[in-house]
Length: 152
Image (cartoon, rainbow, N blue to C red; front, side):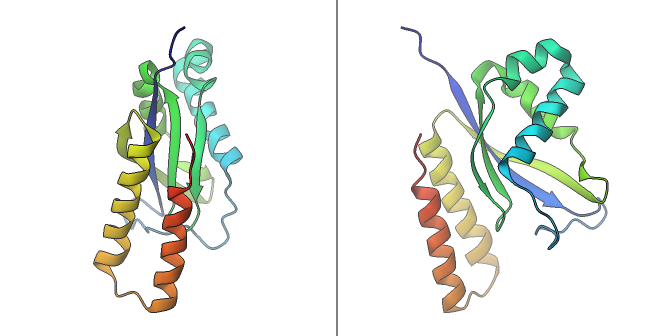
């Protein structure tokens, strides 16, 4: 039996104009997992043609998306990571009004390592650089628990 070799990409979505990048999503943005995966697949189709879309696009899957932190965990085939990363580089807008940058933070072979990296990275980003009040801290703990509950 052949084992499927996957890679998990941890991606941060950075919104805003290139000269003044904002870390949080605009309030009027209604983005979901289906819209994101369609955007990534269309970028692969545009940049690598039908063959590239067939090889890389068929097994793409978003395992986790948080509109709060703008983090995405994307699963793809191991041998297609370079195509997927290159395609993410060429996505510059979600729609004509909202520019975006797909920043690949971490690549791992298991979702468990990606989850643990995401939890540590989120804590460092949120708790390390800002003063958090108790209700917000409880909300963040709930968010971290949701990440930890992801199943491979």
